[in-house]
Each structure stands twice: as structure tokens, then as C-alpha cells.
Length: 98
Image (cartoon, rainbow, N blue to C red; front, side, top):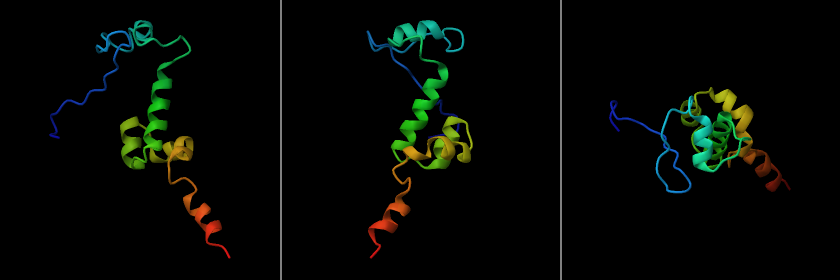
């Protein structure tokens, strides 16, 4: 990837698979409708879901934190339990105990 490459996150409509139109900040209600989501979904829900999925996929903490716009410490404190390595050393200690 080159420094001038455009990075985009695209959300597609449920009914036809086309990208959602409009700006997220000004068109949130339309985006919810196009995506088939309820009013209980807030913009933060998308960030929370992304953080959870990144942790479940075992993505490097530094990379995930940078993509989400938070510190590694914030990511670990709030989403670390979703990472596959969470408490791995502690579990291993009990498995090897005689």
C-alpha cells in the first residue's frame, strides 16, 4: 500500500448490497434504515463491534488501537478479554502444575 492510497470503510445496504450514500454524521437515521438496523444502534456500537472483532481475530494490539483511534491501554482495558491470548499464561500455569 502506498502512502497516497485511499483507505475506506464501506457499509452496504441489506436490501441490495450497494454502499450506503451520504455522510454518517448527517445521515445516521437513513443509514440505520438502509442497513436494516434499529434505533437502538448508535455510532459507538460500530466502534465497539469493530474493537471486539479485532480482538477476537487476534490482531496486534498496537495495530488495532491505531485503527480504532484509541490507546493500546484503552483497548486492553476494555476489549482485552476478547483476545485469544487473554489469560493464556495463567491457564498454562495450572495445566503444567504437578
